[in-house]
Length: 253
Image (cartoon, rainbow, N blue to C red):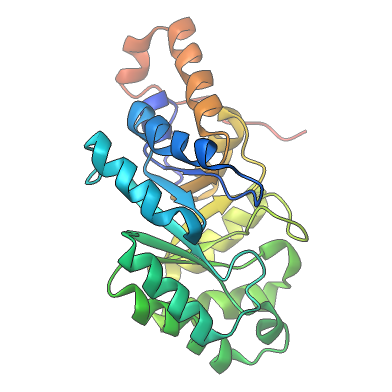
């Protein structure tokens, strides 16, 4: 996105995928996500396949099923399941009401530069998604520059909509401005969008990643980020922010 104007709480909320993917997350925690998404206006709720139908049902109960999207992960978190298994998981998520799919590509094949396998793996999920946006998770911190470039090309050839920095789980690392800037430069050549995830816990980090070129942010700290931005609005005066006052560009060091 990189516009440098997404300083307001509402604008930030609109690009956040409100996420909870901890394996020990309990149902009550998961079902808070759609409630919070409805309250704060998040772009999407992102959950594991196990919870897709329950979250879809809750979004519909709240009357925000057409406003807050349901994103479901596929092949998460390592991407080591077969392409057929990923396609099945994707199709099942679609039947449960998913609007978007966040899939982990086959990192081993990418490391071996078996690019037709990588492309086919992504394409299997894209086909199962039946027109719904697919975000391809790359784990950029584990990849060389060549591997990142080849992965973006494969995602584009397979019909994906986004490339995503990482899962936010080890052995991956949090998204950095440099990661996002480099990924955005590659992705935008192919008309792909960029989702940053991992380590996004405050409004300052969110703004930096958006300024670096991210179009969407995946975070489990969405409520804290929006509340922080709301407090900033109260301190600065909401009128000025509503008129599009730019936030101060971060300085290095």
